[in-house]
Image (cartoon, rainbow over all chains, first blue to last red; front, side):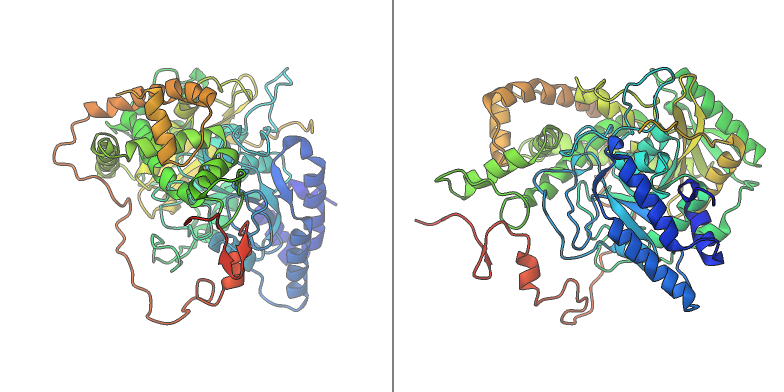
Length: 493
Length: 100
């Protein structure tokens, strides 16, 4: 029998439907692969029983001749930012260690309703704050990839680093991610997989641990564009419990997939040619243009003049929202409580938060508190929100001459764990190409393009108009068909 | 603009996070680096630009005026609400004594 862990979402779903194998066989194979891969540290907790129970339900439905859902029989990894009923949900923090939700997030519930099962809760940067998966309370996640001739542990990207590592290592066919300023796309690029952040509002934020609410969006991470289209379809949809949820029908992205880009104009933003970008990245960008042209698209030059200001604006807006969102961790309602002998309420708050938050989380809460404080609000926060409006305006103007934007996902390939820890700013710069689309709420995807001479994956980013995930996915498919990227990391774990 | 150690201590107090003296010393240059870098936003001409409040225009909805319209977020869930509290007592969240 074929090794079932080599299969993606579509192959598993179709195979289960056709009766080539059972959902239980699939879940058993992936549970075993997860158990063998502890060295990656991709999971905070594993839930083999959840995967088996979901699989058995699918097999029973099939035996009864019932219709199967879009994700039927597919066991996935769930980023530990989604609340899961009865299963510890931590956001990779100490302050939520042991927190066991009484409810299920809308996105995860949608996936279970579609027939998916859960292999476990995936590690991430603490509260999704980080670009290398080195800020988790539960330890760094390793990428399955290594540089040629080196044993150094590489970063899987962040914050969805457990997700990217697990999918690239073939211990999960797909995983959920969340993207606030690149947290789906950057890890996907670092590990040679696909990941799409849909238009803001497509996926419900209800039951997702909040970081920066005006930016947070969930999305799928998988090894093919088709798999992303299927899984996004299962995750998305209107949810009255999220005030920013889009009240729109979810298109059938899977059946409308087409790599024919005739009539589409692809914009190339000159501002993304930044100093310090790897030569290999520029080369893969050029290749990407040629592939899209070959698929029938017209390539046009565009300008996004406020690009360089997007990242600093993000590092005011996101920490400001985080400082407000994370005020809820007070040692009263859930999670950790640190009550020093003889102390009162205020001391309890401060001691709990000191013990429960990691350094990067504290840093961002402090920045957020500062930029929102009296006297600085206008100079920092309001200015950043105005710059954000200009960044969004750049895109609106660009849509007058193009239908889609092609750019690199990251300025470099993955780096060794521990190599960028000296200065938070250097780490932030990783998301320089990802953040503008986040600020504007636009759908954006990373697809694998090539390997560097050192054998590390590189991604290309596609950014679309609001609500036009289809064009993004179609262009992703055109790249996938032409890059022929089917590299897998060599197993060392 | 830059911050002093005293100012960082004050911000940490507002954010209700205890920081040790060593942590404060480490945090000051890190925050100042970040603040110096975001300073470049001051170069941008924002005259006549409204601060963005929503990325996707989306009017706020009113829910139906129904009790427990969504059972997940409806009432009658005291035990579930308290299930993860570090010190739930007598059906309430327990906190240290606030009033003498």
